[in-house]
Amino acid sequence: MDELEKLKRLSAEIGCDPLLVQAAGGNTSIKDGSVMWIKASGTWLSEAMTRDIFVPVALDCLLDGIKRNDADAEASLALVRCSLPFEILPSAELRAVSTKR
Image 1 (cartoon, one colour):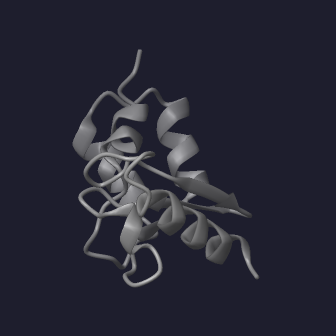
Image 2 (cartoon, rainbow, N blue to C red):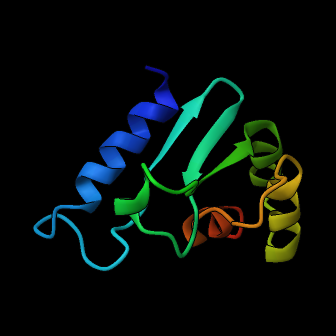
Image 3 (cartoon, helix red, strand yellow):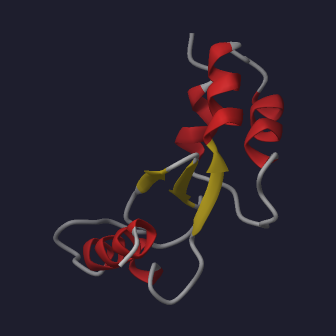
């Protein structure tokens, strides 16, 4: 079983337990080589095995934005999107990472 599959299973298990989560259930992610798989904003952990809720983010693009201390949220999103053919976006926390001073 690959790492993304393990993340999906764990996320769904956590997301289906009402004693562990509220609403969508929070965020999960995993680094796999040069890609970071991040739960998409507005998706439910409990659906991790039945829907595509994880977004691949190219770590080199993300780290470049952090190194440049990019304070422009749209520019940060553009960096994240450089490897995304998806409609969904990673969690809001990731989008805020490069705006922290």
